[in-house]
Length: 286
Image (tube, rainbow, N blue to C red; front, side):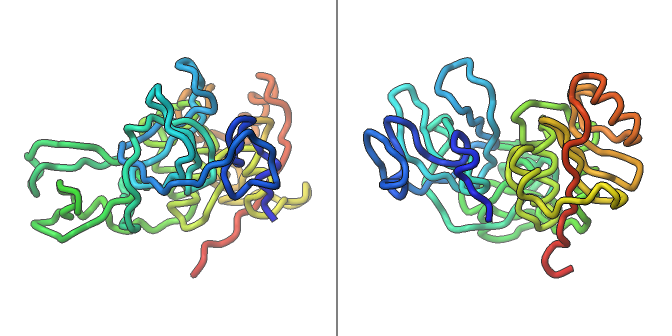
């Protein structure tokens, strides 16, 4: 069973001064708060593990994703937990809105919201892959959103493929520590987004993925398409038996490269040897 207490700073909504009400009796805090259901209204919302202005990016939340709010601070930050992967941290309170029923997900790497159903219309907002929207109707090849604006229907159409197919769509996207969209993402976000697009739930960070995703592969089992390979703090996806696809700081982008030379380079750069290999389950219905 996946145990969030293995990763308390990231998956358990508890601080010394405040914790979620449902944790009362299990964790110690000065006070406890009931969670309030919210939803991300920004295109991409940064989340940090600390409230300091210079805090490193922990992850990003996407438009429409659920968020449980436990605290709104005078400095404009909100503290709470992502409903997608359980990540806990601080976000801009202005990037949250009321919770709404689930809708459709954007399947394009990046989409635009238009003021009217026409490709020459003014763009009023943007939406990343995985963003959730509510469609009120369709008109002239566009989806009319319940909150206003229009999105091309092509950007909501299902895109078939496995985890590798979806990961390959990100080739060339810039590397960004903590990033989780086509504007920039890190190695574990590439795995998470590719898994989600293929119908598999995935945790956010490399150490969680190495523990929870799929099944561990014995050393004697050859790698194949779709297998995950882990180093200390890094993960990649096997595009085939001899090729790796990964978001990495060497290329500062999502790239594909021969597996063995990549392994040698990562180890020489201080990343150490491969620490884990895991095989993903087949998505439901396949």
